[in-house]
Amino acid sequence: MIALTIAVAVAVTAAAGLYLALSRDLMRIVIGLLLIGSSANLFVFGVGGLGQALAPLVEPGLPAPDGPVADPLPQALVLTAIVIGFALACFAVALVLALQRRTGAADAGAMTRAEPPARADGEPGDLA
Amino acid sequence: MSALLAVSPVLVPLLTAAACVALARRPRLQAGMSLAGAIAWLACALLLVRAVGGGEVLVTRFGDWPAPFAIEFRIDPAGALLIAASALLAVLALAVPARGGGTGMHSPLRHPLVHGLLAGVGGAYATGDLFNLYVWYEVMLISALGLIVLGGRAQHLEAGFKYLTLNLFGTILVLLAIAGLYGLTGQLNLAALVQALGERGDDPLARALLALLMVSLLIKAGGLPFFFWLPAAYPVLPPAMLALFSALATKVGVFALLRVSAGLPAELAETFLPWLGWLAVAGMVVGVLGAAYHYDTRRILAFHSVSQIGYMLLAVALGGTMGLAAALFFILHHMLVKSSLFLLGGMMARSGAGFDLRRSGGLLAARPMLAVLFALSAASLVGIPPLSGFWAKLLVVRESFALGQFAWGAAALAVGGLTLYSMVKIWIEAFWKPAPETTNEVAPGPPRALPAGAWLASATLAGLTLAVGLAPQPLIDYLQLAAGAMLAPGAELPR
Image 1: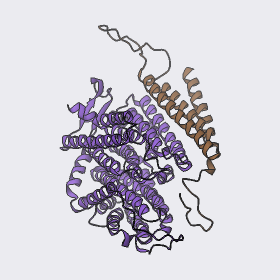
Image 2: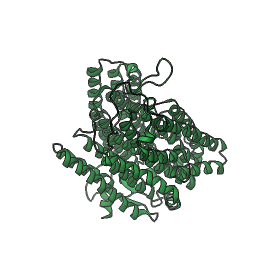
Image 3: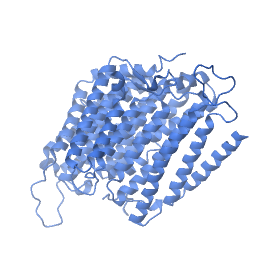
Image 4: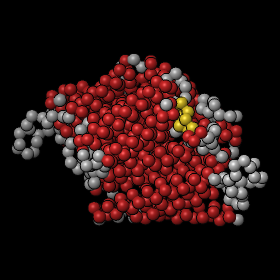
């Protein structure tokens, strides 16, 4: 049951993120990418196996416990991924704010300064 | 001692970056520190090449955990040589002095970011652990983004945004694929993972996750159909940084693909590598057509990178010792030649009328030495003997025909013709054509002196492509050895 819940959550978050990322508004694109990143984090969390298990801690000198032991690695992985994702999120939001302040535009389709479109006669445009 | 040497690809740039942050208020001292750090990195990389030059693999497991549980740095001959080549390019790019405003070259953040990028590159070449690879990709991504937006103008921000969206999506896919493969096999160590996949054979889930991993690495490598971040972002960079990016950014993705595909068991390789080959051929053609259309040196060369990445991926798809050696040879050749061309493009722009070829001309008379260097590098890119590009293409084409992939070999030859066309276009427009009439009445004074560092860097690179072209056999021997080491990963793993 918990596995199904996580699976649905991953799918819904990824779908919502993809929907936002495919729009033309810059801030929506960033939020969409962050949502996709969150769904990836949830997926990483889920691959360790969900359900009842013993903590993966063994006292010194004692034998390993019987029965299933939780996999501690996905938690370490997901923590790393969250930290990295957080840094990139801050950068991305700051970049979009700077772009909007500089150009006043929030439309991804209007971003042609680094890739100027062809001139009217079909020749390549000028790059400053 | 050898453990310290094994982590030096990451440790040296990180320490240099920290020192450069501390020296942020003393620009001259910071530039000196940065160059010294890059030279130290090169020295460490050369020591690594000497240590693994006999075909050994230097494996360091952190925390002394047993294989395959430890995060390991496994430096094989190929990785060591690629780190050394990256370090050489870093030294040369940092030797080009900062000139002109509005490019971010004077920012106190530039040197720390460059070394952050180098640390990511060193880690990505050194690591044998997939999750660790993801972390180094993110280190590279954030440093590269910083360098792109450092110019601060609207075009830099826009280029940075495009780079961010496509590459961030790529790293998320890398993470998803790695996590899925871990869930399936319980392995993060690349060698152990590939071995475990071989035992699963026909599992469709394993195949889907492996495909996801290869697609995400293709985004990082700038392969078709995922290359769009490359020509969007590269042209706004100042030439010295452009040379560095072209030598580092995509090569790491190609190398990771090389490592993954080298270890694949035969039945998985038969499924995936033909796809990779056709995508590579399509990338070769699309990239060179983009280059043929454009008139801005930076955009021409950026599209050429897409085309050349196609050659590298084609060699990866051919597989086997010769295919992998050809891919490695092509990567090294491209690092030298494309960086040299980007630097020369910057020097041409400085001595003429900017990067747009339609407005430049007359450089053959004004700058004969520049013409010689450009002709050497461009001929090498086209693949004219006796330059490194000839051998790189020969290895790829010969292996295509040897394996019966005649369409791939023919495409590689035809793309060479189109490469010649766009290089000749630069030559005619910038060097042969008389300088265009200047509209303003100011008489053109004596040409501005070009910085000695830029001459040094581009002459070194052009000399190296000539040297490799004249005596390719030692390099080919070394790379065959390296390819052999890559084809048998995890020989030391417990079965």
